[in-house]
Image 1 (spheres, helix red, strand yellow):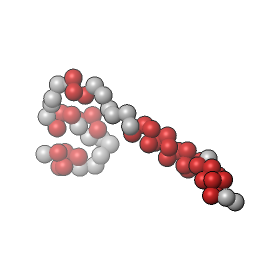
Image 2 (cartoon, rainbow, N blue to C red):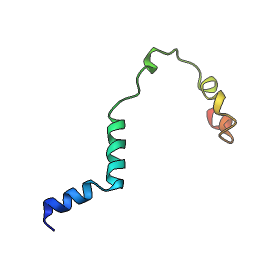
Image 3 (cartoon, rainbow, N blue to C red):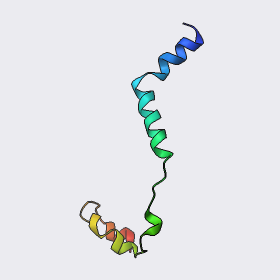
Length: 60
């Protein structure tokens, strides 16, 4: 296989396509947070307290 054919083969593999999609998604920054009001970390994490054990110990 020539180098160019090998590159095309590797580029079209599933893993490489998934990585490519992830890279494209990461190029778009999260937008809109600059317009939200600031709040204490304790208040911001209140909704995920049941999901993360000992979260209040880490936040306080």
